[in-house]
Structures are given as structure tokens and as C-alpha cells.
Image (tube, rainbow, N blue to C red):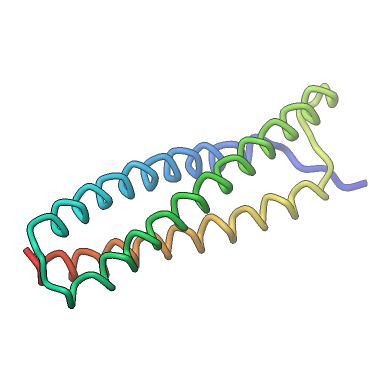
Length: 127
């Protein structure tokens, strides 16, 4: 069976974990800004947008939590596999999981960045 070295993918996992942590912190900051904007504006036209962003921030925070959990579980699996293999190699089948996690990470990063830009346009309009 084909094997791969985990040293080639370990740094990528660390990058994902740092980035998901950053995005989680950023969402918390955006939530606070939304609360501030909503508190300073009583315009009824704004309420549906406030609800939209509240919902989107919650959804993305939940998605980031799940992604972070899945990355940490995958890293633990890799560590177990590598420790079982004295040479530090794991089965190539685990690479498919890595690729799927990478796709999820890239998608989540795009969604969070788009949401942040969209929210900043909203905030600029209402501040």
C-alpha cells in the first residue's frame, strides 16, 4: 500500500487551526460591531439586515467550530498512525481526508471573508 510522509501535511493543519481561530475571533468582533450599530440605529429597514447578520455569524461560528474539531480529530488520527509507523509514514488513504478538509477549509475561508466584506459595507452605510 502506498504511504506518504506526514511532515508534508502537518504544517498545513497548523495553518488551518490558526486561521479558524482567527476567523472565530473575527466573528466575535463583528458581532460586537453589529450590536453597536443596532443600538445606535432604530430604523425599521435595518432590522432584517441585523437579523441576517446575526444568523450568518452564528452559522459561520458553528461551521468553524465543526471544522476545527474535525481538523483536530484528523491530526490526532495522523499522530496515532505515525506513531504506529516508526518511519513517520501513514497510509495514503488518509490523504483523501486531508484533501476533503482542505476543500472545507478553503470554502469556509471564502465564506467568512465574503461575509466580513459584506458586513463592512453594511456597517459603513449605517454608521
